[in-house]
Length: 295
Image (cartoon, rainbow, N blue to C red; front, top):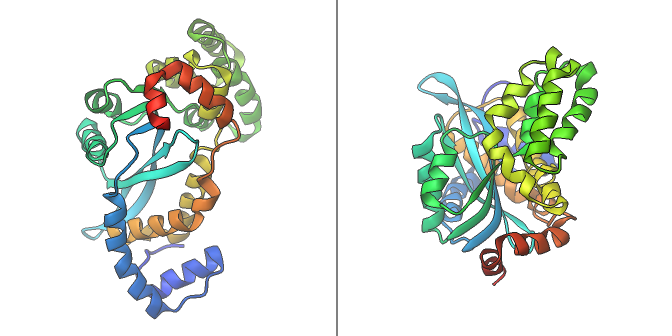
């Protein structure tokens, strides 16, 4: 659908289409004005002192700006608490990301009470490693294996995707960094690596942030490469964004995403099945830092 969320009537229609909710445009008009105040309070709320892991991701949206429709990124931070439950730490809308932007975001988290993040899972976000090194120097930065796989398969024709995905398993299921690098070299030299020559360099560019993955036991790895941590949430947000086309303002985009987050919280908030076993491994790997998260 082209056009943005321009009227209460459109928003009412959107809520009915997506969720079967029948609300009047007049009610929507009153509610959406109040939502901006609610978003401001939510974005400034106090946070936990320690998060075992935080997934940082970005969602692309189209927003009308000075008469032109521009691509902007809504950055999302999904925190996992010591009991495995998840919460959105915040939403940040920015046209250009970089170390300065990420340092501002991370300092905002510090000012809201976050003292430590054990593991930051990211998708090749520009400037992020430098910024987190300044704000949270003890944090381990890990490339999101799910995103790396999806990015790899973007280069692959539909008929080959299942076979290429199976070949890539040898890399992320390797026992240690040396075995993983050998598996990557074997993939590059093999028929799929030669046919889709962009995949190997994509993994090598992210390698510094991939390597920490191999220090983790299987229970923690599954948390990192299964899609359930942030993918269920992203699917809801992408669906809402696709149905809208473009938005008339930054505020319109944030309002819709915030409302979708609230509406679907029950579906993405619960701990993953693997968390009980992963928790014991986090305690071994991070010691007192993880124990503080449980306090």
